[in-house]
Length: 389
Length: 198
Figure 1 (cartoon, rainbow over the protein chains, first blue to last red):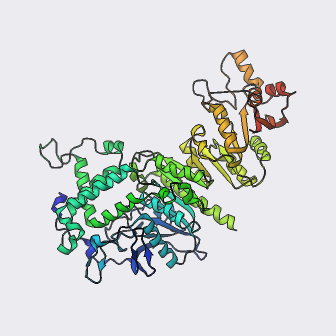
Figure 2: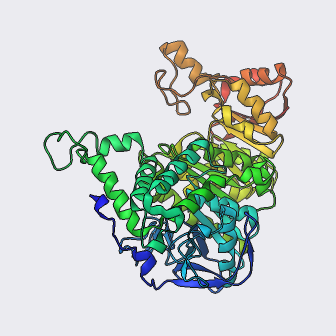
Figure 3: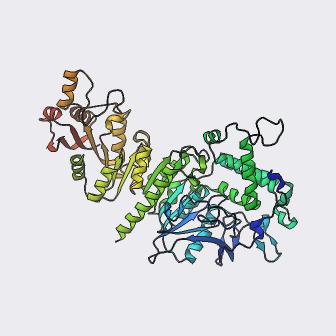
């Protein structure tokens, strides 16, 4: 049914979102060689910064996330993407912590991205937007931390691409966070993950409405391609067991097969729905740019093949978390981060959480994850503050 | 338990770097953190126990001593502790070697299978011993390689492992083990505690 969404209005692009935004005037030299300046970073904050400025937590979002971590997302009117983790009386309790989350550059929720308007032409930048990397995203967000006048964050936290940003942040700014929690991520994007991202990009670029990335000039949107990209990606976020238990071979609103290509099976209908709601909130070019940034991520390569060197200068405490059924960012890849940290005697804790919800586990209601994460953050906050006194 | 913790704690110099292998729910780590050093890490195989430790803010890694000790550099800890776990490994000799690599000194504690109460059970009842310290039945015990104080003592001398200190524990009574009282301590103690170095 989502294929009837051809003329869906791009609420994100067209609606004037009342979002917090700063303009970064400092020039930012990107990994691709280009330089950007006077660019916007959209962000949201939750809770209050205490007088010592010691309770700030920077949350990094994943591929299709945004700055709306908790509460109601004003764009989608749904709960923020990490509502299970961040909020009042949640594991990251906003009664206690000041939580900051920024839309990454390349994103489409108000930060500088391909859907930004080029003032000289009055048109969207489209694929004239420079290629960005995880390193660029993190450097841009550091400007926000400077703007907020926070000298040292209590923690940097994120899952998936958010976890990659956590690793890059500590490597770039070794004395700016006391605690780092990379969740369900990797230090180097694997061939399998590059392959899935490429599949998504090809789906978008194969859509005739993509127009080489300048679809907005023609008032078009490559919704079919973007929806297919999302459907394929969505499968990688789940586990075989989870899919089988939730859907099995159950039929969608029918008692028997129809002998056609409609969504006979519930899983088909579910994926089509996921695709259709996604195109309403996400920009196809952003999807291209952000997946590219993930593919380019290889932290050990940045340090001449030695991942440990990325963390040599830091005293930051680490807590690495993976999930048993996550085959996209499997435990083995998370463990490599732990091994690199241990080999230089860094302070690192690690646990693999039992869950059959796949990679998406970090976003979902997985009680042992939520409890361990919350207890760890609160105990560590207490220990660090006691030590200072 | 408390006596064992005290003995271990007294073997450790203040403000040194410690790794507790098989740290369980982190009770010993907490005890040492309060009494000896803040710089303490744990390695534990059970997810649930690792989660308990992390919940308390302890730095613990989920992993297996037989395969995961390798990731720590040589002599990266002043002390590595293995408390009542040696008997549960598939290959205790390999684990001891790994511990001696990672730690400058190693503290190993051993539930003594030579304790007279244990011996009597086998001798008179003719069944595998079940005691306060060894509470499992033969069919569900995690203990694969039980040994006695004397076994471990002999193992160290055969493998040229230096024993700095060896302590026998019976209930809360603490005594030193030496060459001449070895047979007696092996009969009359429920726990042996060894401070060793390669």
